[in-house]
Image (tube, rainbow over all chains, first blue to last red; front, side):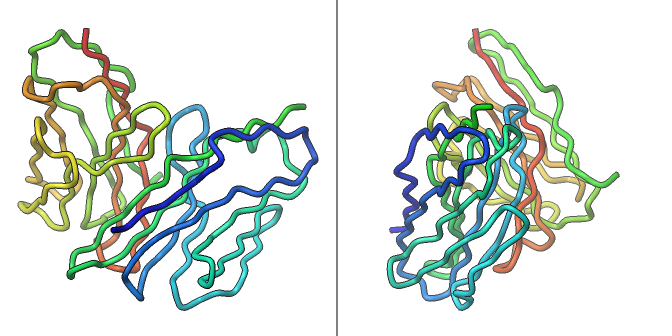
Length: 116
Length: 114
């Protein structure tokens, strides 16, 4: 069965520290997509990145970077030089196509608090 | 500005009453989705629709109903049969509902049943 595990429930860091949010997934599909979303206190989920299962290149976007490793079924997210505005809940999600039906499975989220 | 709107942001209802949550998008997306979020949990899919006049049950459809009469609108009705309706409800849309799609979310409606 599909599963997304975000083992870190809450993380607190001091501003300017680097922080890594872990995401481990399970799927029987060979073609799948992984996503990260940010949910600030306002509640709306903001799309951050999509990665397909055939592309293991790491991605960097400003202070954000993502490390996708199929060998460990992980898709970790690192924020460099964290800022207070990064405080939010971050969700990892998996989209796969078991039995011809697509399904998106979300992790339970990691709440990040950046302390000034 | 293109986007997804959900109204109202906060909704209070008495137990036993049906309530309808609004979701509108002007992104010209074909697919729309409803998710439920409970504290400390991930999002769970209630219903989704890939085209007008068609929709499919998600993982937790019991006690909910939807309609998709227009491309831009996908209202969700929380019926009295839903045993624990108090939650945060998020609507999303995606261009085609296909394998490479990315879902974009609205601001959510927080429903409290008294």
